[in-house]
Image (cartoon, rainbow, N blue to C red):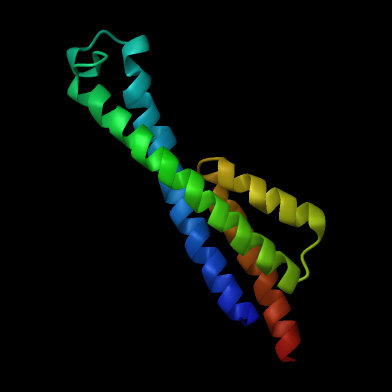
Length: 123
């Protein structure tokens, strides 16, 4: 696979993992654990609609995010070797996939560095 192809695969996986993580952490988990800080009926444990939605998001998106994060790590590693990223840059990029919203910054940063490598190899 070409460097451009690796970059595209990485960007797709980074976006998917980032969106799932945002939905999981900013919607699913607050709804699932909202009964701990609120006595609203819709957040009541085992019976509230908000609690049920949060539980479903946590259960299904949590598992999906975990598996897709492994694919993301693989694509990030393959891209890092092909684009000759420094090891600290590679580690930070991989770890940013675990922090909501920060993953989008890391993807932008990695894309910028890789495009420089693509231009350098074309010249």
